[in-house]
Amino acid sequence: MNRSTLSRKEFIRNSAWALAGATLIPGMLFADEREERNGLNSLEVNNADKSFTLKNVRLETGFEYDGGDVVATKTGIFSVEIVNGKITKVSTGQPRADAIDAKGMLMLPSFRDMHIHLDKTYYGDKWQAVRRRTGGVKGMIALEQEILPEMLKNSTYKAEKLIELLQSKGTSFARSHVNIEPTSKLDSLRHLQTALDNKKKGFGAELVAFPQHGVFYTDTAPYLKEAAQAGVDFIGGVDPFTVDGAIEKTMDFTIQLALDHHKGIDIHLHETGESGLKTVEYLINKVNENPVLKGKTYLSHCFVLGKLDQAKQEEMAERLGAAQIGINSTIPFGGLIMPIPMLMKHQVKVMTGNDSIVDHWNTFGTGSVLYKANMAAQLYGHNTEFGLSRMLGLATAGPLPLDDRGQQQWPKAGDAADFVLIDASCSAEAVSRLSPVKSLIYQGNIVF
Image (cartoon, rainbow, N blue to C red; front, top):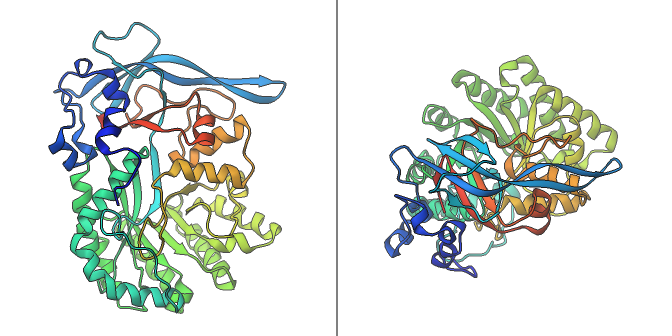
């Protein structure tokens, strides 16, 4: 699965850090053959206080206007100081003598994949395309019950390989759904937690306990209760009517479990008919009854929104925004066009991810959320300087260098040192041209 135009050695050799030269980075561990086998995270700053300075960093400083239209993005060259995982100073003054030369690369917030399944993939193992399967979601449940025991045998290794793919595309954080069901029990969770612990210096994650085989269609409820106490951050769900045959029973269980254990909620909802709409409305009502869930509740996919007429879409977007319920999904999804601009207009937090990458659900997957931002810009006609720059927020899950008025808002002293250096003149170009990521820093650790 590790097929690319560059080997990992070549990729590291061509990175900004290799170009800067070993003498500029005291204590930095460069990759030899052994380190390459250990993965991208073998590259770290090894200073006792984990401090270093970057010079010749390109940062966005404002917009250029022609009348009322944004026609370009202003940038400048800065030095950025990092201490113990934090940005401590951004300046135009003379940098430290031992500063690392960023060669004028554009600095952007590192990317975040907010919907992915790291626990079940073929990536890093023998190539397999998707096989045709009948029976819809329940047919796929039956398939998973057959294949998961074999997939679990090396799922930690494959999760690590998939994390390395994400890192190579500039992603330092993911929200991963992880199977919790009677076949895997909590093994998928434990294997993924091991992979994440092995990669913790270069990658962060939050986990969703995902009842892929239904809460009650299979006897998953006891395992979800156990997972809620085993390090997950969200309680998940999937199509309560189609899979479990009961919206209220399944949703009430999910919501109460989240409340009892102070977790968020992130529910897969593929249903596009009446049951899909009823599920959305039921969740909105329950979140309004339990305000502690506001800002902590998400619907993954929520394809029913793409099937509603415009007036109903507007109504639901307004209600979701008021309840602070977010929408997470991959972009695009088949022929379905989701009303993402309308959701954003009503302050609904919209995030994206790669979902399944090279597994039994999906043959495809680049690992790049910048690609998802590019696809969204194409789908919704955001081809102007301003529109493209706003689409970057899908890749970063929010943070942007400039606000809508062109005021610089990132980076500032105190911000986490989570960023990429990318070969682009501005964020609009990065989104439009899928500019290559040259370096990734996570919590002050140089990943590559």
